[in-house]
Image 1 (tube, rainbow, N blue to C red):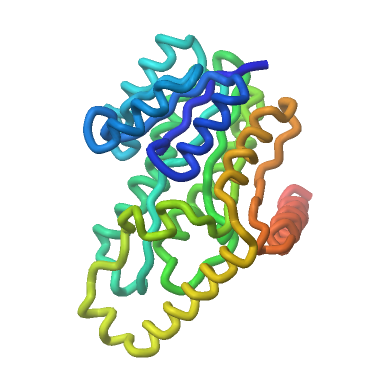
Image 2 (tube, one colour):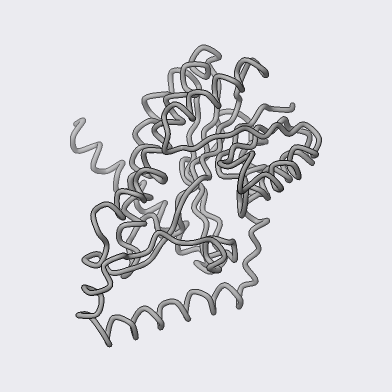
Length: 285
C-alpha cells in the first residue's frame, strides 16, 4: 500500500537518499528543503523529476514556513501518512567554547524544528486515527561524548519527546520511532556541509594542547571505524523504507542502524527499556 510521506532536510545526505528510495518503492514523497529557488534549486529540480515526488520549501526554524509547507501538502494530497524528521545540524567543540547562541542553533533545528513539524502534522493524523513519525537522532543518543555535548543534548531531547508522545498518541494509532544511525559518510560528517561548531576560540585555547589531542584521537577513531565497516548511508534510507512498510502497531520505539556498535546499541536500548519498566512498576504498585 502506497503512502504519502513528508521528509525534511532532503537537499543532501540521508534525506535525499530516502526521497529517492521511497520514490522507487512507489510511495508519494513530499521532499522538504530550504532554498528551493535559491542555493538548492538544482537538487530541487533533480528530485522533482522523480516519479511521485513533490519538492516544497520548508525551514524548520521558521513557524510560518513549517505551517505553509504542511498546509500546501495537505491541500494537495489530502493526508500525510508518514513524517520523517531528518533535517538537522551537527557540530563539534568544547562545551565552554560554545556561545549560548551557538548552542541555541542546535536546538532550533534539531529539537524545536521537530516540535514544529509535530504540531503541524498531528491534527490531520489524529483525525485519520493513523500515522507514523520517524525522528532521526544519533547512535549516541543514549550517552554523550566529549566535544559533542550540545549536539547530543539536542538529540537527547528528541529521544525524550518521542518516548513521551508515543504513549500520548497511542489512542490515535500514531506510532513514533527514533532511528539511531551511527557514523556515516554524509555531507554532515565529511566537512562538505558547514557544521555548527564551537565559536569561542579564545576559550578553546585554554584547553590546549590536551583538548586538541583528544579531539583528533576521537575523530580518527570514528572515521577509521566508518571506513573499516564500510558504512553506507543507503542503509538509513533502506531502514526508513523498512519502517514505513512494517504493519501498523509493530514498529519499535527505537530503531538503531549502526554496524560499528556490533549489537551494543541494541543491548543498551533493551536494558534501558527493562529498567524503565521496573521503575514504572515501583511507582504504580
